[in-house]
Every structure is written in structure tokens, then in C-alpha cells.
Image (cartoon, rainbow, N blue to C red; front, top):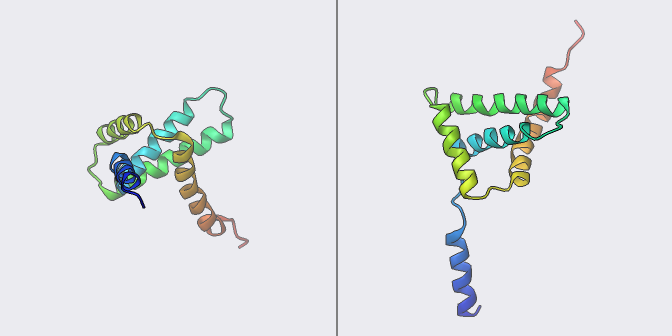
Length: 115
């Protein structure tokens, strides 16, 4: 590979945003879900899913670190998402994918059973 291409590739890698820690990723999901909830004309079912997802990710944050300052953590996540120009569609797919996988895994166990 020619040297200019290698240099360009190296610069592109260093310019990319660093990977999110699990805590930062969960906090970003709360921020993204909050952004979605604020969009106009959201169907009731979507708003309910957003509330459920928000509770899930807040629970993960508190479960991982019980004394966490949620306000500071979420403000940091919002600022970082804005600075990095986070792709809302990509992030909502990431967060929604985790929620969908959880629903699929727990759905059968949550179904009512005949006595």
C-alpha cells in the first residue's frame, strides 16, 4: 500500500472517536431514547417502549455502580454525543437491538402459564 494511503488511514483512525465504555454506552442509550421521546407525533406504543428502554438502561447504570450520579453521567453522555455528532439512527439501532434481544430471550418466561 502506498505511503500516503497508509498515512491517511492512520490519521483517520486517530481522528475516530474512542470506543464507549459499557457505562458510557448505556448512558448514551438513555440520551438517545430521551431524544426520540422529544420528537413530535410519536405513537403511544413507541413512547411506552422508550420509557421501558430508559428504565432498563438506568437500571443497568445503577446496577453496575449503585452510587452513580445519574445527572452528571447523562450530561456527560449528552455532551459527548453532541461533540462526536453521534448518529441517532445508528445509536438507536444499537440500543434497540439490545432491548429486542432481551425481549426475545425473556418473552417465553414472561408468558402467562395455565395453572
